[in-house]
Image 1 (cartoon, rainbow, N blue to C red):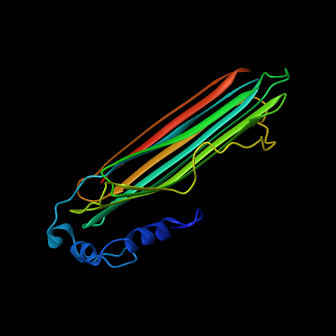
Image 2: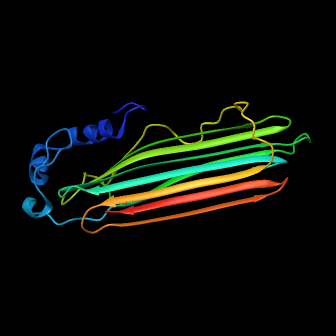
Image 3: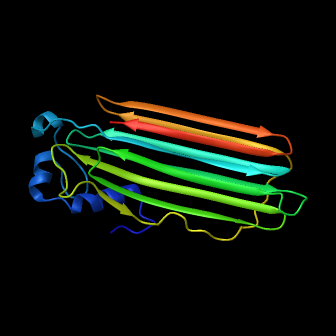
Length: 218
């Protein structure tokens, strides 16, 4: 199993090392993820893979900060398709009144049509008398092999379990209420689709909120 710090190339190589030789021959690939022929040459029909990744963050207090970043990239390699993405959302708040600050952040992933899914998700959160902070991150690789599926259905490998909670890290928002979010989606292939959506909202001396999602189909 790849380590928690493995990059997408290492994760994909791990997946291809699990495949039988006859499957690799059928899709024109070798161990390491490279390919030599397209779907027509391999004699299998293309299959669609859809991945949606995103999250949200909210902070309440006199001074608040919420930020979000989402990216999602997919490519149809002919005999197989790969989608790689990640999302990071953070929230922090400060209030002159004890117990007046709150912060929360979450990320999510939905994948359909993939044979292998490797995901790494971790969350942090905590609060003090006058401050609060939270963050959530998720990264994933989804791979689909045209014309073949693992026995027992899709294989999901989780490198971290969600919900890992730790104390506040001491980071404080600047004066005021800020919200910023970016979402990008990119796809390469013949039959592809992408979509993104973001929202950001602030109320002076009250709260900040962001959410975002990026969807890729290949």
